[in-house]
Image 1 (tube, rainbow, N blue to C red):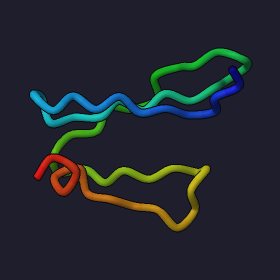
Image 2: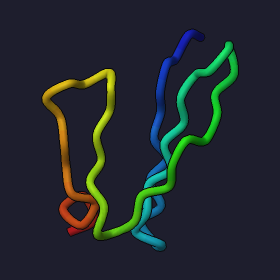
Image 3: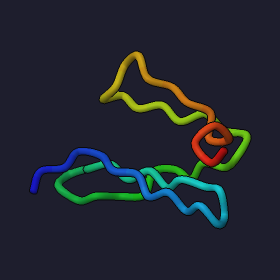
Length: 55
């Protein structure tokens, strides 16, 4: 339905998969782990440590 980006959070593995629309197809662009920081080009002022999400 036109989603430009979505995140799948796996609380067991403490990881987040980031998908973005590229040429009309949602594609996995990165998998983030507990020591990584989540950012998005769609949310310019947003950043969050993955470890904080799973506290």
